[in-house]
Each structure stands twice: as C-alpha cells, then as structure tokens.
Image 1 (cartoon, rainbow, N blue to C red):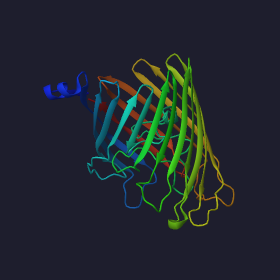
Image 2 (spheres, helix red, strand yellow):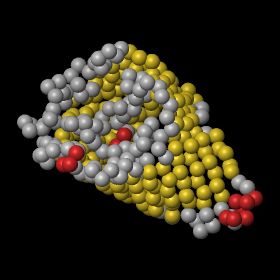
Image 3 (cartoon, helix red, strand yellow):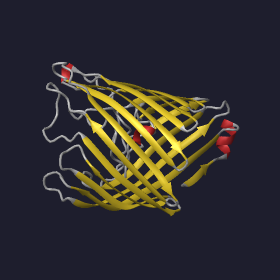
Image 4 (tube, one colour):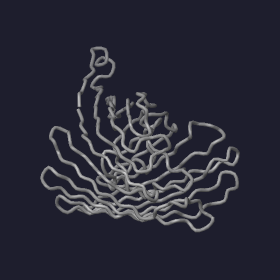
Length: 327
C-alpha cells in the first residue's frame, strides 16, 4: 500500500489538530479460468486477469469525528467481463466512537459480513454461499465494484468483538421501485465466531419487481492453524406481478481450511434443497456441490492460488489457477 499524507498550513490553521490522509492500495491476479458449460459462443478455458486500485480518504476533526470516503477502479477480463476499466460510484461516511454511518455505493448488512464468504475458493472466490442460489436471479444487494450501486446507507456499531449492522438500499431513489432493508450481527468468543443476517427486498407491483427475503447463519471454530465452519441460509422470491411467494430454497454448507507452512488448503460441501412444485427451478439443477482449493504463499503479498469445484448446474465443473498479489 502506498500512503500519501496531505497536509497544509491552511488546513492546520482552519482545523487545528485535525489531520487528513489519502491511501491508494492496489491488487491483482492473472491465470486461467475453466468452466465445462460456458455461455453460447464462449470458450471453456480463458485467460483470467484483474487489476484494481482502491482510493480511500479520511479526516479526523478536533472533536474526534472521522469523515471518510472511498472509490474503486477495476479492470477485469474473464468469461463475463470484457476488460473495461470504470471508476465505480463512491461512498462517504462518518465515524463517531463505536458508530460508523456510510452512504452511497455501500454493502448491505449481509454483504458486509466476513464468515459468510469463508467457504469460497480460488481466484474466483466462489462456492458454498448459502444465499447464492436464487430461484429467479434476485438477491441481496452488495457493494458494486464496477457500477453505480444502489445508493444506500450502512450503519455499523462495534463494541469489542460484537458488530451490529443495519442497512437500507434505495435502488437509486426510483419512485417505482421498493428498497431493501437488512440487519446482521457478528460476534467472536475465543475460538468461536458467529454471524446472523436477515434481508427483505420488497416487491413492486407497478413494475413487476421481484421481492426477496432471506436469512443466514454461520458458526466457525478456530483450532490452531485450522478453521471449520457450518453455514445455513434460506431464501425465497415473491412474484413481482402477482405477489405469489415461491417455495423457500434452503442451503447448508460445511467448509474448512488448514495451513501447513506456506500452503493453505480449503474445501467445502454444500447441499441446496430444490423447491417443490410452485417454486422456480431448472431441470438441470444439482443439489450437492463441493470444491477443493489451495494457495501457496510466495511472500510480500503474493500467492499461487487454484481451485476446482462443481456448480449447481448438472455437469458443471469450474476450475482456476493463477497468481494473486497486492501492492
């Protein structure tokens, strides 16, 4: 990370002891990506790369308030990205003691969790997410690395190892759409860590916008250089036009990782229920998925990373191999 300290005589005169700083952090990866069932016209094996810079600024006032902002620049080339390099919509906020409030292009309360993503493997960072399979393609709103986001607010309250988050996503303030509300709690007690999250994305009949409700829970236990976790999630869509709710889609994931010297090995197995008649599901849906991944530390923020996993599409196998680094 390269850190740039911005200070001036004028700032000092106006703000007294206030200080400001800007940080620029970069990271990237490159390698090969394979998928056995690519979209029409796409190759099964493609070159895979990303370069990203994150620019953060903050300023602490005499009263102890810290104002902050962030934007991200990302270029990515893979099976679904053509390599454009946009600057995403920014976010700004303020921290006062244990409370932080951030607005703009923000994560919702589930997207901001940590354990929720710990089953993921490889360069892709995919596999085992308990709210990942959404019957109609709807879901919770996350931070947009290359887009405009949903113009929301995320409030985070931290006391020791307890973190409570609440969020609202406005869907860019459009009057015809309904917003999304989410709440999550994370807590760590010795080797045990817990997370709970709930999201409610309202349907809008006027534009047939799908509704979505979901909740998830994760517990993880740390033992030396190893971690084992169990995650559960349940979600369902609501038809935008009729208001009829689909059957719940339930997912259970067991995952773990262990480290041997410079080598880290990861694995997961996940089971997703198929909705009964009345739900939306494809004939080629695979209920049980599993994956294996590994990383070898090359030092100074670089690693050789690879993974192989099955997907929720029958016959679908994904694999990647490459190098990740940060600077």
